[in-house]
Length: 383
Image (cartoon, rainbow, N blue to C red; front, side, top):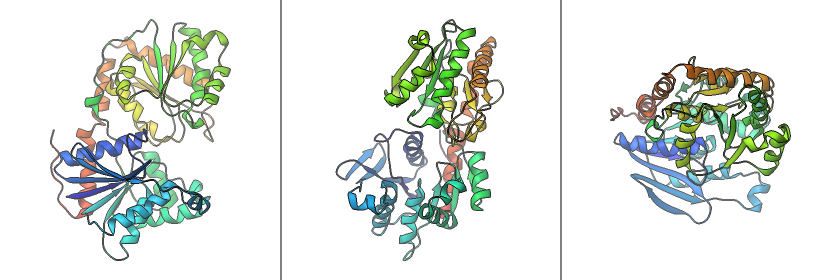
């Protein structure tokens, strides 16, 4: 099967969960015996590179004053790049990771037939898109004509059905458990509470976690809090403003760092916290579980699909308009999760949960969806 994967941004120029998923998905499909090309963009001139067995074509990002005046964001202009590329190249199926990519396929399909699968990486919330008429129109067309629409969580699937009247498939984002080895033993005398993400978005819950940390310190005085990821200076100052000055030395801002740092951070942490609202899924939680580290998350969005009894706790976020506000609920969930260490099998149980959400289990489901859209019998995934 000849597969084209399209996405306006790619790893490593943009280091988010979706871009990492695209990278891993391309390699998994090659592993299954398919020929895969990734079409994306990058700063600077266009180039073609080999990412192992995957051919990656990175178009120059189209961004100028005229395009901005016309409202053509990088995501929208990339749809034009997809259309131009497909007018000269044919594939068995296109796997789109943005609805404007699908719009580019639709342009080509005025003259030919190019089936596509649309993976929607966010939450298809109708109220949000109704405020953006052009995006709403393009998204509805992309959903209507896709051979299949895939989302990552029950929460996203619910909005797809109720807000857009489109049936879809729920396939969680697979975890590459081989990159996140099981770690046994943590410093529970001075437990580290890890939160990984991009904290430029208030919805990630950095502030409510800082407030919850003050509550946790009353019971566990030696606890430390680590923020790993992009942290704008104004957010950093806001977090420190939440905490008493005496606790500032117990908070570490680790920065973006390297992807290779994450397994070590998860393995050293006593627990990983994701206090987000409107989270599509929550890859940091499955990665943490793969390392044997229990998790805490908000009872909102796709996070509820991951956290089960015995591997962590959920907390009610309170306000969900912009960011969680229930610091006392989060602090209680953190303390209860630390209590799980009374069970010596905790790390193994966490790892087993991650393995049920791994590429070995979920990859064949993605391959099957893409192959069916192409009208091809999927190959049996190996290893």
